[in-house]
Length: 188
Image (cartoon, rainbow, N blue to C red; front, side):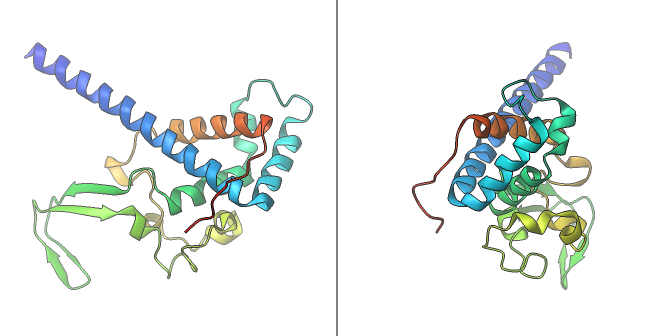
């Protein structure tokens, strides 16, 4: 029994590490690409960095400073909306459920495409457009709770969400504190 517990914990830690590592890398990649495509967005982020950090733009970032990056936060949310780090969420249904006139039986396996959820035209007008302003507080109040779920939702949601969001902010901030980006290809 002890071996099974150790093996289970080892698998859990391995999953936590690899899923967190890969998803952070994917998010940073898309964020840098999109920031490089939109110079006006990059300029806003650079202004925000200067405003929050002042002359100490090379020192370590505090949690308080990271929480002040509202423009960057909107950009990262929009990146995760367009290109969710985990494209699919699989679940096993615990009880019969009716959705849009269809009954999904208990114990059925379902897969939710975050790519499609995040492109619902009713919730996100012009869903293919990169528009970080849709996540400003005054613009995001109409977004239903489970219409934006890059880290899943509910009791099975990502336990590392807050850490991953901070990690992405730190990485993107460090890169943008030293460089200006220019993406060579346009979005298709």
